Length: 406
Image 1 (cartoon, rainbow, N blue to C red):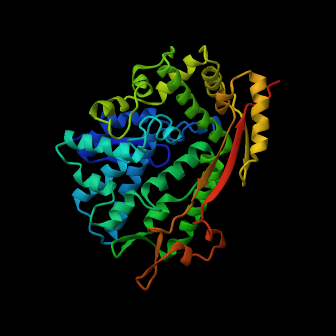
Image 2: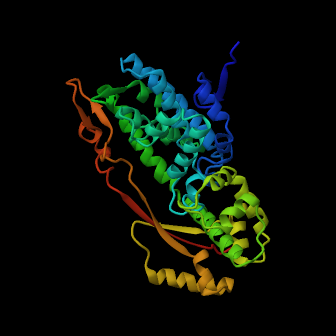
Image 3: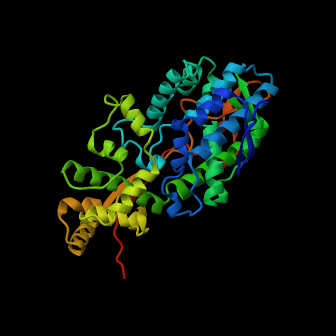
């Protein structure tokens, strides 16, 4: 008798895996690695419950994709069993390329390569392993499949990825304002002229989705404390690499050593590097930081203790760039307090900016299907003033430096 494969998810309840190939991919070491990659980076330093993983997220995405397929079929949208399999595989594998702490270290291990590029590398490797049975899924992931609405279910302004991470991250962080009714939105899905759309009666659910996204970005994903912690993590990696290349002793796991001792980019990223990257996860960085707390190098040990013991810097946020004179005054004070060289001050005093674009109308926004059969953008369909202007990029500036400890 065929064994039923079930996952018990705290958000959606029991999730059933019926497709053998889908389950084989989930069982693969490439995929199981996602159990060791945190979904929200270092956000747990702000929201203690945010310890869920990329594995949780992609399984949830697959569940929502199952629901979307069921909904569209009930509305007489033809989706073959091959296309169903490809949709499930594509959404499952879309985050395979994330490195330790997800977005926090984007581009730090493979120069010039985002997690989407690395996800594609994993997919292509799996495709060879499974006798080219992932071709259609890869085509959908790349947005090249002829049926455009299927590509949009994988990646668009209202895809299964966004529906899950907003609901899931809201749940685990405890930030109720980010919660949304994903099932309601999916029940309103339809296809018009090969484009994904939402029935007009679902317009208020779309408005809630957009506002929840705005709130989660500024209140959670770009929270100033989490932002400071993730910048420190980048600087820890940079400093450890500098020391390694200078011949200094820096204890680390062998797989982390591969990426600190070698310059990895799109040209050098071969199968050997891919297999090494497939073993790299949060635990390599945590192991390193715990050891580096006692390192002879003051900068590396100070930064590592900042994360391990949550001794984070002071963070100032502003709608305008900070006065260079103010930054210079702080640098001088920190330089004297810690007695460090000018060249090392950038590790302790740093500024930058973060931007967020809540909603994009181009190349394709969220379409609302009218009774007439035509579709219009949510911005034109909505009467809610809060939606206006959300397609404009918002930029905020930050300045971080060590607090005065008593």
